Length: 356
Picture 1 (spheres, rainbow, N blue to C red):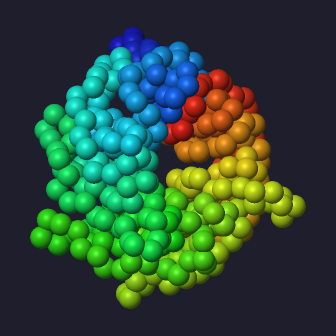
Picture 2: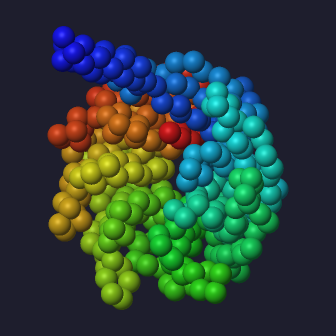
């Protein structure tokens, strides 16, 4: 009898755990607020069905066009893409709404990207029009300190357009669309020193915008806005070695198009990029030994002007922010082939950045 009762309790516990499992994940959306949008929005995303529900305004903010989490996900940071650039910090509340903490100057116009290092103690902001990158330490309450360093890329002859940056250990990589290069800085005595003004040669007028690094830092994939290409390179003892540059567009597409975002799949077997103009997501199969790419799909985003896109926490879905058509498109990922299948879309004014 005791054995039966013990088995019954075990089964009941397992049933309760299963019934209480929650397939919902919070999605934050950064937007432009020159139309109907008021700031940062939130949805609940069902990681089993791919549905977005319970739309709410998470926080009022001016042009929060790019957003990111703190390492512990207790805070969200949003650039305010304005002439007098700022970056805002928010606390994530229990109900997933955001409480404004503070904002600080980015020392440049129209900041368009912000990222936190893995240690969680530094942030770097890219100022598109300002042509510079501001570096900040993070306070105990989640707010950002005044910039401890500003990396200036302005020149007398070429207009700099700082577009994105990423930390990797003690290195900082910074993509400058205007100067047509990805810079490499390294931390030394609490500041970042220039190691290389161009980690790999890019074709003239490529316009590097965003990039993805493999988890081990051995490969980098740079998406070039102006030439609609991806440039691949491999890390060596002496820097990076060029692998190839490959088009992001379908072979029969001949109109104007401009790349935006880029992401590797969790297992790094596939690479995804967004095309504004062709209005598509391009998918590449990646050779994990050589780093080379093979284009396998260009699929319509069912919208206009795809900006940032993201892969959901389960790795089963891709969500795309279509700025001009004011909608977010959801796709199912075939984990075997890497290809996408369109599911549906939801309306939202001027979505730019998606954050799980």
